[in-house]
Image 1: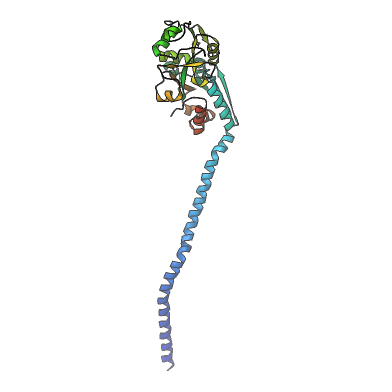
Image 2: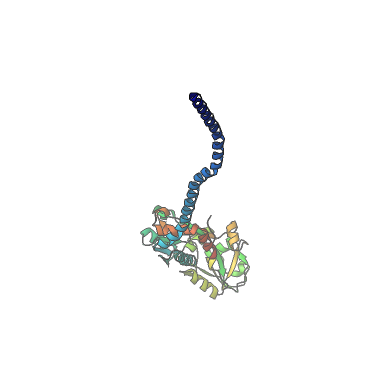
Length: 316
């Protein structure tokens, strides 16, 4: 009888175990469903950590330029075009404000002298208001065009001429036309003012008019400012200067009925325009980090705004 009871009890135990086993299937499913958020949370935690890490890295990369600005130190020496004086001074001031550890110096000795200086290695950058010659490039100098400038034809404020054609302008500078009455002005002798030999402005002006080495100057002056002052103070005078220095002390003349404006130069309708070149001995990538930083700055939105602020045209 005992054996039978034990057998029945054992059988009952087995049935209960089986039922519990069957019930555990549902419980496991429910537990899995309930635990899914927990498991998802355990997966999401590394993703969140990765996201935070990425944000930290991004923040670090954003902070890097400021740190680089604080760390950048050294000096940059420039020499060359007097036409680029306004631009070069503005660039130096703005760049040194951005990079307090950098000193920028500039001398205004003329384009030819600037290219010679950078070729000799006595300055970091040679400023030229004309394209480099093939001989200069062959000497290892890189032509880095940073802006476009217009050359304005100017007269004294009282001049009555409205404008000149290309041929008339060429005729005045070669000495074929000597009186303003021959080009629609008053009966007054023309005083031809220009820049000295080696000037980038002179080189570009004569090249664009195709009158190289043919000009008959009454005055050959060694700076843009000197040309402005001479023309402003001399009745009948005519000269040429960089567009960015124009003020109300002189009168500008249209060339082929096109005014010297930024819009006309950008549109290609104005004849007299030329590049502003910051020449280096070798390519920009071969320069020290301070010089490279200046060229990088010039291609930034801030640098382009600087170019436009001094009346020049940005290079795309």
